Length: 86
Image (cartoon, rainbow, N blue to C red):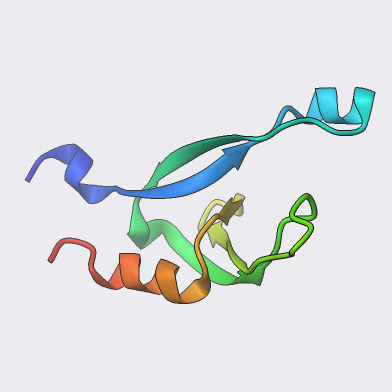
């Protein structure tokens, strides 16, 4: 097993908060985060304030207390976690 096999890839959005505060609104950039699924402390349904439809996404907190918005529904997020290392 390679070291990187311990991580799963999850979709996130990158926002320049400094620019957002200065001009009020900025575009977000689609990106991803690689996480160790064994470091997840909790997760819950949430939404993004910039999404006018307020589609469901997942708010994940890791054991260090960092919170990340994952752009998957709870069902999609749980499927990715359950399929990890199969």
